[in-house]
Amino acid sequence: MYGESKVEKFIVFKIAYYRVALLINDVLKVVNCSSIASKEILTLGLAHIGRHTIRVLDLHDYLNREIQNPMSLKINNLSQKNTTEGFLVIVRNLDRQLCGILVDQPPDLLEIPDEMMRSLPKSARQPKTLLDLVSHAAVLSRNGVTNTIFLLDVEQVLNLAINDSHPLALKDARYR
Image (cartoon, rainbow, N blue to C red; front, side, top):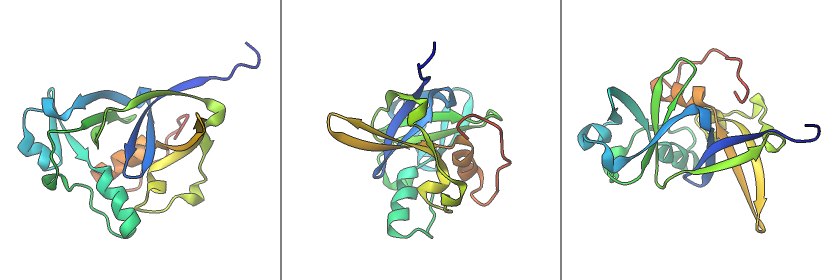
């Protein structure tokens, strides 16, 4: 129909001081950390989910270090956290690699019209900051409150999980 905009569904959660989102199609599942059998392995940055052992990223630590010292990178500091609380957002990329993003609270499902999503220029990307992990942003206002939501680039997040110095090949995808 003419004049109707397309609406995409996103999983939205808070990491450090930021609200970030993932396309719902990039999210395999959300798992309560209390249901993960081996807490010892979770503190090492790994989790057993079904028949898979996946890498767990603590983006809280990554983004908090950005605020304190942008040149300092530490992905996993899970041994100092209570890993039985919170949730893992399990994502997969186009190559079907899996990774878990640790979040404190259950994520929200949010519908955002395509015209609200703004592509961030590649020149804005800065190594080892939030801008290196996101591709788009949306500014939403509800009940007088304005929020910026950053769309995580799954390929960049998984690149961080595997090897933060290994550049990814560009892939043709809608929000990448």
